[in-house]
Image (cartoon, rainbow, N blue to C red; front, side):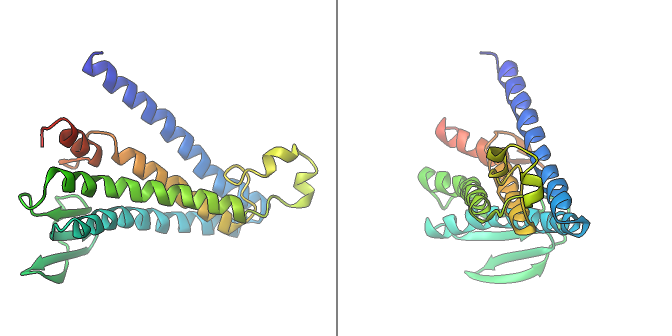
Length: 213
């Protein structure tokens, strides 16, 4: 199969999945607003922004912890305005002023790890998001009180039990939002590509698998 055909299929699949995730995120705001009120919608919107930053942070923390577990010392950890550099084995916290680079990343010594260690390091970030995403969706399903009784009486009972479609309160909507965002970040990072001049986790894993790294 042509490389361009594969790329077109990947882009098409990304578009479909992106639209589905976007629609479900929009439903968290609108549905919980209809059930609880406008303030609940605003809470979910603001909470969603915080969840997004937390999800990206946890992705990078996953890389960092995997590197430490594999015995590969980090050089720097960057997250927005925060930068931690390891100098002589000791961490130094500084203000990040390198805005021409990615806003969130972990850098390791390039010659200090085996291929297996690199595979674990690059897989840890997406895996962290995927596990958290599934866990949040399961927690939302368990927590969900469902729509108000007056609403349940007007529709099909089976669908009301699906938390990601009908979040009955703000905690359920926020858990759904966290689950969807983490799944989206985890899956997107596994697609081989260049992001801000940096090879994605999926691209790094592909290079390791094919022996190019």
